[in-house]
Length: 421
Image (cartoon, rainbow, N blue to C red; front, side, top):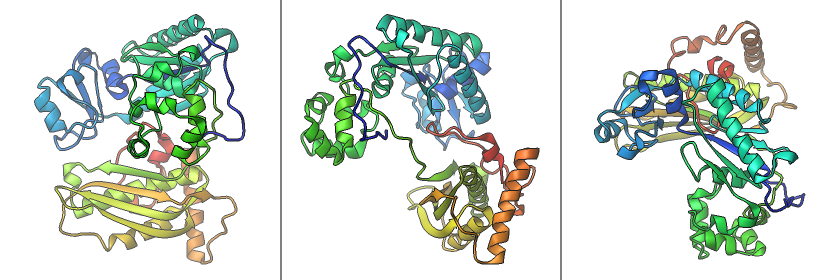
């Protein structure tokens, strides 16, 4: 969460809840249960490929009593839950339903921020900020999703004085829950939570807090503003002090730090040629996204993880403020020459880093490089007008299906960019 230090937090009166936060429950698995009646009421795991060597990317609530969770190895998941139904992910379908859910919520309350594929936040209007009125709005939101999209797409909703605490509240009662945190209950309402229940406190921050004797939310809430500023080593610590007490802290827009894609290889692609094909496809997608965001990159990061205990291969290649696919492919090919040749690849990833706005970037000095930039711009314009993937670079011809769309929960793919060259 990025917060502006320039404005004072806004304090709400007791009994008011300014924010509604919606979290779709077991989203990918619920989408499949909505689409396929035969899966309803049964343990379901959504997987990237139909092999026991990959991991579950989503599981239904019916599978969780067996110890099957997101990230569980598929082979292990099948041993723990013999009746587990495996479904290969259909990510285009999940994006389509996401947009339908947003539209349904908008019929009740304007969606202020889409936080991820399965989360969104709404600021309540002043006349609906009393706890009872806000709870009625929340139930109306649930009803709209059930009636307009599907009854098997359940959500948990949190109500609180600020968006941060509304997200915390949405996790208090799952699935299909509705929880309210009032300002006058703070911060004691949070004391029973774990530090990891608070978004933004990951393993590194927990270690930093522990070094200062803070191992519980109760101890965190007891810190003074200066002490929290010292822990965070910035004004962000003071922002946390205010958020934990229900103050509505203004957020700064997030900026893109990286653009990238990764893909677990299907068994048939676990070869030197197969992983190269996937890397080419991933780089095409990342470059198309970069151009759509009007950004350029100064570094390309290539990673390959291998089967067994073999260390991953990782290389960083500098690129000269570019976003055109031919130039990036040259950098990838140069880095690829130093790869290990005696290991079985399992996962591939490309990431474009050190991003800057494209505006003001001079054209390359050499005519060949300028032609590459113009080719990428022309291809994007034609694909936008005629249809995604109508035109693509020849190097992608054999790899167009090598790395199908995948959704990170914090990133909702643009289908045109995913399909573009």
